Image (cartoon, rainbow, N blue to C red; front, side, top):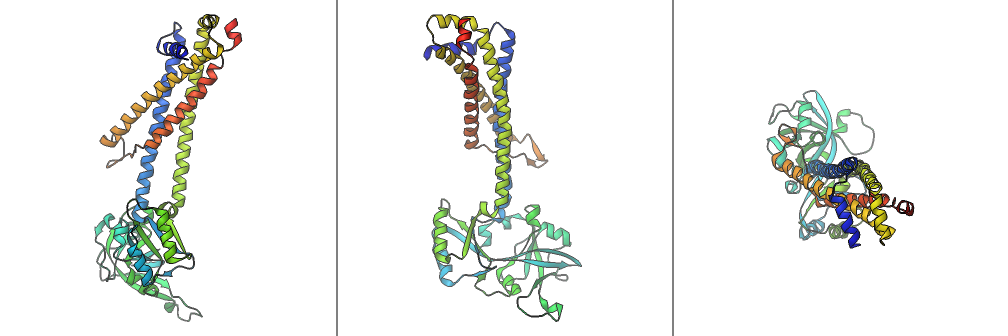
Amino acid sequence: MNFSFYIAKRYAVTFSKNKAINIITAIASLGIIASTMALFIFLSVFSGLREFTLNFANVSDPDLQIETTLGKTFTVNTEQDKSLKNNTHIKSYSKVIEERVYFVYDNKEIVAHIKGVDPNYNQITDFKNHLYVGEWFESDSENVVVGADISRKLGLGLMDYNNALEAYVPKSGKGDIENPEEAFNKMLLFPLGIYSVNEELDGKYVFCSIDLARQFLGLRNDEVSTIEIKLNRNSNENEVREDLKSIFGDKIRIKNRAQLNESLYKMLQSENLFIYLFSTLVVILTLFCLAGSIVMIIIDKKENLKTLYNIGLTQTSIRSIFFMQGIIITMFGLFIGLAMANVIILLQQHYSFIMITPTMPYPVLFEWENMVIVIMTIIVLGIISSWIASGTVNQKLLQK
């Protein structure tokens, strides 16, 4: 095996007398370097885009959210409230009331969600830090914070107490409606701030205090739509789920960020798989070039191989020479390709050579997981192509 490795190393680092073989081997080596770079850079770029996308979702989504499996709201009694406060895994939690509402302002109308939150809400999410004008409301006021898209569509201004934002929601109850005006609860709201996160969220929420939302929707003080929870660092999610089940019973559903954005996470996973498979296809084509160059080297070294065979080297040992040569070339290309890819990623992270907009660099993220994926992919495919190429050494070739 050591002799086979020695010969393989000599074949890998020395030039052949046949210039065509040298050119093909060089192209195969450059192909491995380029495909390794491409695979790692593509995965790193996608990791950056994924983190960039999820950062927007993390603005609005808590670590865990409790919702009812029966109806729209559920009650939280004093004992349950105390249990949440005393739970060592929970850093903070916020009670939330949410409902779709019909808004009217200056003869313009829109349907959006009113979201009543308590003072703890800004410890759970990052909405307050995304106000680009105005300020957050006080808990005992009729002021609201609206999304930038809602503000634009309705033409809303801030602190305009002469023109209120009108909100309408159907009244609960049974029986026939004689007067249409009595079928809706109405509330006058006054925008105090405007937030901007992304297009979807900017057109979805109007935030107000939870007491104002309960009054508007006709709910009791112990009723909530959801409870949003921020966990302490290194908390065990499964343990928290068990604790919450023991507090509220089986009539609740607990969702983490991935479950709250299930379609988004599935889309990102599908895109990641597509990028990996597409890049791997390029790697496969490149390594077939490597296999072709090894086959040509075998043909070129045919007389040398006969000599080795005649002095006692077995067919398996001779195959090992070219198998190891393929692995050496693969590892060389892998090392150089990864080194160059890491340099490109670090330069982009620190100097932002490629920009999406004049103020936003193209996001890239170095992850060890991507490094492992690239290394395993290149090595496995390199082994397969080298094994296929070395298999062309047979008795017929050695005995001609």
